[in-house]
Amino acid sequence: MFLSAFFFASLASNAQAHRFIYDVEYKKDSTQNITTKENYHLDIDSKEIKYYPRDFFVGDSLVTNNLTIPKDSKFNTSSILVHQPGKHKYDDYDILDNIVLKLSSENTQNWKLTSEKKKVRDLNLQKATTTWAGRNWIAWFTAEIPFQEGPYKFHGLPGLIVELYDDQNNYKFELVKNQKLSKPYVNQYISYFTSQSVAVDYDKYRNAKLKYYDSPINALRNNSGGTKSSEEFFLNDGTKVNQSNTREVNERLRESVRKYNNPIELDKAIKYPL
Image 1 (cartoon, rainbow, N blue to C red):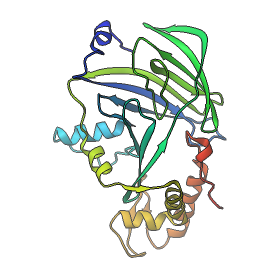
Image 2 (image 1 turned 45 degrees about the vertical axis):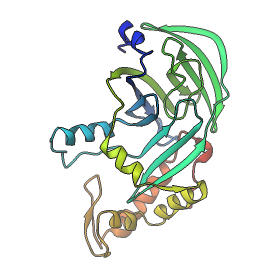
Image 3 (image 1 turned 90 degrees about the horizontal axis):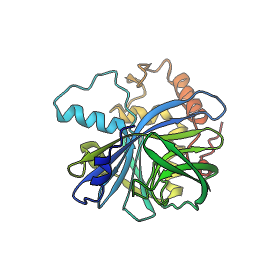
């Protein structure tokens, strides 16, 4: 973790933006001990705070520098979170097939500060706990970085959240890097997806997820530009889908949706029928 004295001194400047990069390790399937690790960005400026997978940054950088995106690239562009400093309202942009669903919600955590402290490299951390969204959470924050923010929708502590995990070890967030930006970061993909979004309430959001689950193949075929069931197309893993294996692949995708159903907000996990 590189957190210099110069960085701390620059926090008071409103003319700059700040980026915090987290390692996020989580279980897609809560019944297995297999974990996935990805990087997420938390970008903070005076007007807006964005939390998104690092793959958005990678894709934008490749295009901006006129570099070709490899054909076998698998990008995590599942969702984008946006909110305003000091506000509890979060806009969650969920990219589902060929539409972007915008689900707004109010989110607060009732933190309990403890007297327990520790030092991680050059940061003094303090422990806090909360029960939120169906899980018990432990956070370690630092008042030395005066942003009351953290990964995902976690915020409200008197300093930046540096470490965060639940007591069942399903999710773990760890700050690994920071950057000072000369100006607020504009990502062409994020701008496009947020501008094309459709606002929905939770019921409509849930129904859209269930509709995808009913027939993933149809949804993916439409997204690929195909319209006829006889037309071939490829999944991200290279699987060729055609008339002969449509039913088999469709059921495999449905099974995957049921299996990898371990969201951060456990109390909002959708119950998919068999």
